[in-house]
Image (cartoon, helix red, strand yellow):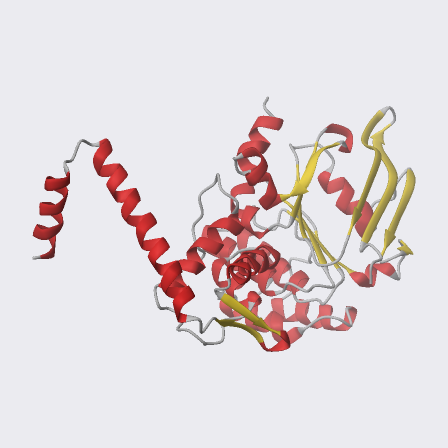
Length: 235
Length: 119
């Protein structure tokens, strides 16, 4: 119950020797939180999510999901939305639903169908005929229709129109589960701010510059998270 | 439709104010069951824990009454509601008056304006 959903201990990762993207990154997240991972381009946000999702392997350090060391088994607990859609362009939306139903025991097909209908996305069309934003919506619908313990959403609202953005944020709120945690990266801080419990400001090499409760920040600093971000990361 | 918020004040404080206004304005009559945190959070497009915090503040004021697992109810204490209502009305009128004074509007001018608006 009180085991952290996610525990990262002294993670190190570099793509080029001597240029660490993450340097001794540690983090612990409890259940029932919506957490914003915020930082400038290239600070290691996506790398961190990929390490947690198991797409990349850390050079050193440890990741635990719900108390278990990261493994193929713990992947079942994670629902990951990558930066870019990864589906075969020739696949139809309905085939993706089949795919997810087969692959994930926690996939709620009814929920996915309802969301696709709400967003006006037909199921019999091929992915390659959809616009970039619509592809992203399809992917988000699939990811949010699982009943996972940890959701990792890499820029879920970046590529979609403002109306869909509202719908997606409402979906995240409507999907709220006190047992699950959602970690979101985005640059659209103003949009996401009221939705967050906690935030992390990540600087270069994955250094955590500031962290806390998104609402308390306003009380402490008298300014929004967006304004604080601009101040902390002023170029 | 998401509610709109001032960027400089905590969202929970703004939620408390707005919901207090809704209750005292009669949107939720005394003794009625209050919507769930989940529903209100969804409606306002805010984090459920923030909404929870806002409702707890109204419980502390006595406007909302928690009843275990059945949820929250609007208080039936009419004198408390009347008192809160008077506070809110006074605060509102004081704000309008301060603004009028800052613009150099005299009491007489202000009163005759209100009377003319009412006709």
